[in-house]
Image (cartoon, rainbow, N blue to C red; front, side):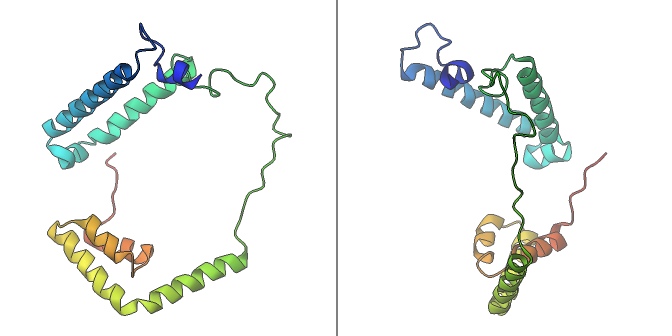
Length: 172
């Protein structure tokens, strides 16, 4: 049902034609991606597109289009807007217990974090300084992050990068 209704493989002249249709769909996606990359390049690359909030606007437009088609039924999604349960359970019948951490579990996580930070205190300072320098010089942050996470916590890394780049604020 998903292949027939959602993917659309059976919406061609010969659904038995095998990989041709998959190749054709792949080529269409590749072409669309390349066109989008060209549009971003025309705006000055990723940074230029970010400055004009091109990506954010594009995501919002596509989300609106997707939701509109989903709600109108133009875009069939199995179990969401097609082939629904004719006798759905009432809210009273559906119960799900929320999983919450106990006080002991929270304290255990905090203790483990403190132990981790103490264990790698000296190495973390060096790694965070190297991360800061890499960010300031425009180096490969991902590569440096992969090394930094071995000795520094997420909070330490976030704080270091926040001091370098500041906080992102949307232009309104």
